Figure 1: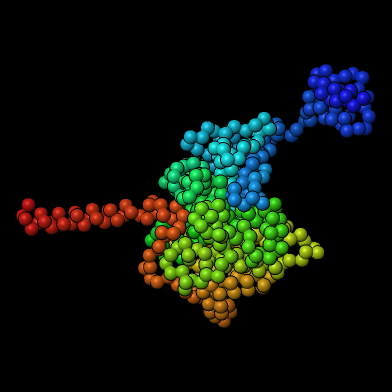
Figure 2: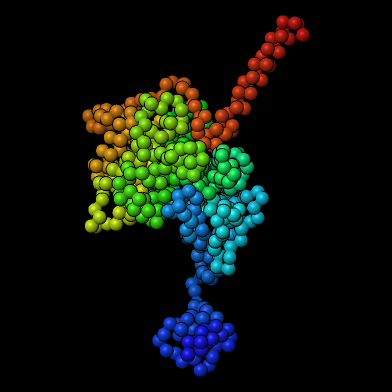
Length: 467
């Protein structure tokens, strides 16, 4: 009897037995699904702009590293990217331009499920994290009442070219960078000392998100990347990259669930959320990745080194996240993972809007802190939120705890505490490849100055010699 049922189920759809008896059993349900899929017409669908809705893919499933290969408890997982994604992969804003990697085609279901540790997987993973990052920030702006798309720095009415991503763009380079001149993100790969296994920076969720953060912020504040800004402006750019990785983690419920389980809801316990680029950090002998967001660094301890300064801002925001989470936490009313997702979502939008409201040139940390306080108050957030922001940044020596009196006697902006010295240069030597890229150092201006000095000398020499 059992063999008869199996034989019936394996019968090709065009040869379904006429005498099949419809009984309410598992084999019958399999039979019905096969019949509907192969013999019955599909349901009618609505039209979208005159075209059948079914002509538009709902989106694509992709397989990605949820952190990086060293964070084994997360590993690889499927995730869903809504919208139209074509061979490459590519969409309207992002194109995978991988040298040496053939364009990746979707399968019959429109999905990009590739084998890990292959070139094709790297192309899909990198594209997916960039896309998730851009989508996250676009949603953050929409939640704040701004529905316009986030532009890349070069976008204009006549130039809507996408950002190109090169997962294997820097062979034998221990770094990654964003380049506005190349309109690209490029990721390095190298063999760590003492090993024979190549490490790919594009496989790190944190590194890809970090570099995409630079690209997003450059589209909003194009003057901030130039090294003629004060050190704190550079710190904001580098910190935004690290915070982007944290916010993107918090935007995904499976990751917030893992953080809660790992820390027992104590965000100051050791967690992959605070550690940046674990695999890369281990290759350099660092137990907490390249950076640890859960730090106690103060501005007076950072000097002009942009990498260190960035950790001051990142650490303060991480403390604010932990404070808001603890303040809102009611396990009997709301799941901890859902709460962490919600708090992270709000803080992401708050930081983004505050950065956008800061000055377009020479912005310092106090500028952003005061905008965070203003926006949180306008959002109707409780006084505790404002206190968290004020207290954490005052502990870091960013602002003076007590606000100055306004002209009307009411509260005014918080004054800066430790400030950059006038004319202090940025020390970017320990930063990522983006901050060290020559295009942001205005080196052509230095050459032009040398040419001008040469021209003046020649003019003077000609006058002296009577030529």
